[in-house]
Image (cartoon, rainbow, N blue to C red):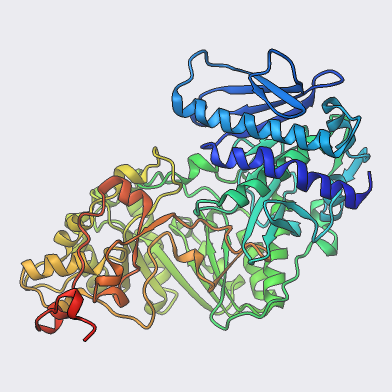
Length: 594
């Protein structure tokens, strides 16, 4: 089958049938596609939330077919003997789509049988180098080829960071884009990766794009790619990994789009923070990097990202992740930042690694001159701080780190950050006064955000209501503490009830603020390698129902995190009419246009 015909067959047969149904079926995941004799095909799906697996057998029409098409039919078996109605509907949609897939294949290939399909699409390659060129050779596609759901292959490049610390295998990010410029990014890794949407014999495929509910078309494209991996990755394939210390020059990604002058590269380094914060589930979703596991490949990918963004004109780096300063090769990264010509570095870290003697000096010597540190401090006392981070002794270590930073840097370059959770609400104003007054440092506090949209995410049990936060931080006769993420209408309600002027509880900026957990959707940030604009987590949100009727909307994000809405609802949000702010009579709706 020619290259062009092969791509066309995949576009016509795979994504618009199976994939659309998987997209609409509440999380069914493709596991395997295999021949079942000469005239049948088996597709194995996994149901969401551990509900079990379903094996669908596609073959010629006969009396035993539960779902019948024009040329083929399907029967299926599930692990669970009892299937409720929502599950039955999900399965019915997926099985009907599989039958359409079979019908389309047989119609496009007269005389063929479904059992031939895996062999027809199996890659002729017997060994590949896991490079962008090697992966395209395996899959039989080139840049610009259609994949599914209206998406085409835009780029393949080395993953800048691993989602799990489970070995030295190089990972590749696959970027798919549609005509509207929307992109999804999937990461190709070893088959052993635990959090994967699909696996073939040698590879796993994981979503790297996070935080947005993917459209049916995006899920169609991702599942079509998973199907292609399953069909073209035979057990006998030999996968060779490039030497980590000598990555080919073509693996260094190139950026060509013009860059904003205020742009930052957000470099996520997921070394273990050594803490267990009450509001954070991220380590349960993607385990921290293990020391020594794939160290050279990981460093090479980080350096490639730094170089490519520097060549594109980015001059600012945000060192982020679980704890970038706990990374065993952080000094190598710091030297690379300087060598690439970056001018400013913003370090977001618990900074407890700096409590060790000499750690700060070596880091500052390696980094550019302009460095800012953002250090989490959740309480002025060990009892409060250690309870929030779930780590006895953490408060003493962070205080030692702050002392070292203040002794070495201008105070304005050391900022204490905080997350408002039930365990520290009553002490937030005291913490603010301690940091700004006693320590002479800046203080920023915000609401928490989830690590995922899963119902069991730790955020759900650690998020205080907006009203509770406002009531703890706005007191008559004292300077209010405004927590980023609390809508201005809630602060206005509490301030009004306590006699605090509106001007003291509402902030206005040139642009509406972004919610905590949503800022990395901004064009100001580049994430990892080129085109991976959405690889950093961006929490899902729902629009405020009152935005168009509220005079405070320029000071408001206009949305609420979906996880917050699930936990507390939207009843706290109340529009503030312009007439109320101006103290004038509000006209009825039918007279307002006169």
